[in-house]
Amino acid sequence: MAHTLIEKIIGNNVNKDVKPGNIVTVNVDWCMVDDIMAPFTIKKFEEMGFSKVWDPDKIVLIYDHFLPATQTDDSRHFREADAFADKYGIKNVHRTDGICHQLMTEAGYVKPGDIAFGTDSHTVTYGCVGAFSTGIGYTEMAGILGTGQLWIKVPETIRVNINGKLPDNVTSKDVILRIIGDLTASGATYMALEFSGDTIDAMSVSSRMTMANMAVEAGAKCGVFAPDEKTCEYCGIAYDDKVKSLRPDPDAVYAKVMEYKAEEFVPVTACPSLVDNIKPVSEVKGTKVDQVFLGSCTNGRLEDLQAAAEILKGKHIAPYLKMIVTPASRKIYLEALKDGTLDILSDAGAIITTPGCGLCCGRGGGILSDGETVVATNNRNFLGRMGTSKVNIYLASPKTAAATALKGEITEME
Image (tube, helix red, strand yellow):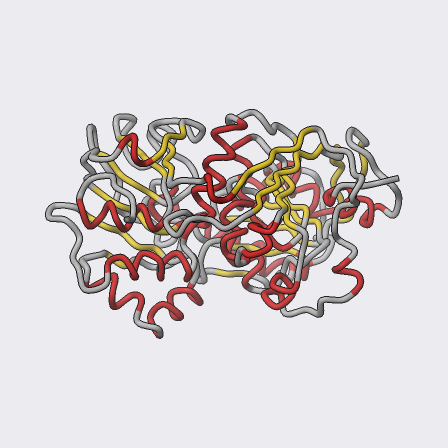
């Protein structure tokens, strides 16, 4: 029986052939609880009557949304999570290290073939290394903390083939935005997006992370890439036969196959206030912008900061415009500091903030007011996400964001 990549990953976990629609109980390799959901998860865990966690070494607590605290109740989330970790011997606690979805692969937790769950919808990010990962609610997470298992339905798969060389001003962010626009926000509901083609092969793991991260914006249960030598180098593991077997079969059956030529992609933006409201940047060029945000678990990695710095080097952002730069992790922050990237961005007039979710979730400073417009590199532009419901949020790539910051209006890198 031929299998898609996600069917292989799930089948390996449950030790049998699976097909779309099967209900199976998986053994969880990793689970992540963020600071927002920690108190709710802990309360539900206690209500369920558990007296111990299934495996303290497979549980990761990460504080990122509320750090640094901006409201008086935020610190309660940290205190309750710390107390839970101390009580049950959980050592994998990240208090100031960055965004959960960056850390789950960067810090060496999730590896190819793993099954991981997290209390945040963008847990789909870990598909960048060939894992099945998805977001769940705090009740499901409480059950995992006590049992180490969760039932799931094996998803159908949409295969996305992209071949060719992308234009210089196009990034993986433009690619995934275009795909979301084509699928719509509900076009892949409870399905896996499997990305393939020589364009994908040429991408860095960081670029693949951007695409996996936004798979959920089309409703997908997960977004997944077959692991390769780049993946293994990133994860610090050998490219052995086990990893090489994590590839879809040539005759696997898909719900849908989407074909793209890389050369036909152009810089795009998700216009207010829907993630699938995709337009070429050229169509909204000239729109006045009050703020630019470069960061998040979508585009806060070193290559993103470097791409912006290359455009801004020796120049200055437009008058009256604010540019906020938030690295996705402390490691990235230090790398960007060491190689001079942060110096370039700071000299250009950008505000550099501590690693974390920051403005992406409307926290950490930088929220906007009625009638203001922001170009941001994160994953959602819903009403009220970055301030009032009358803020206009455009989602774009780091290159488009940097070019926009220079001009003070939406534009694309020449």
